[in-house]
Image 1 (cartoon, helix red, strand yellow):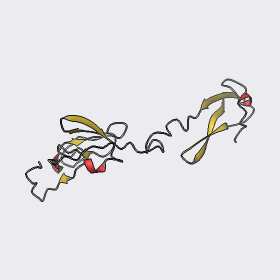
Image 2 (cartoon, helix red, strand yellow):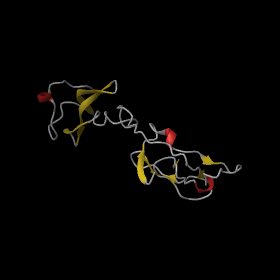
Image 3 (cartoon, one colour):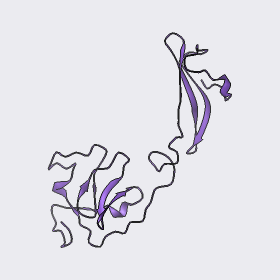
Image 4 (cartoon, helix red, strand yellow):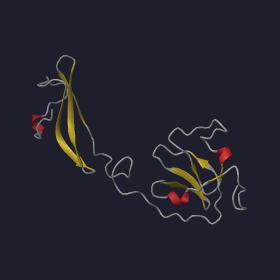
Length: 156
């Protein structure tokens, strides 16, 4: 059940429960949805175990964490970009290197990269390492070389 919006009436951790199960209080609105702000579980024979939900804590972040704008940075696509060798793909059948956080990406320098925990890929571009958001910078990530074709001179 949803309790009231009056903060002073919300149970505090350790209080005796005036309810059974879980009861939530207050509201947070973000991303076009409304969420409870504070919830309590009745545990240990009648003791309130409470917590703030922080449902909208990451709302300003870009997807998939929140509903904020995509972090699009302008990175020129190098003219001399290379394609990645499919036999070196981190998740390929040809080796046992695995990306723990998702599918790999092929960077313009021809190297396969696993995503960081925040979903970005670190690619080496024009002599510097750049964190690339794949949602906003798809054009930077290159295609892999197919096994049945020759790569042009500027590719691996």
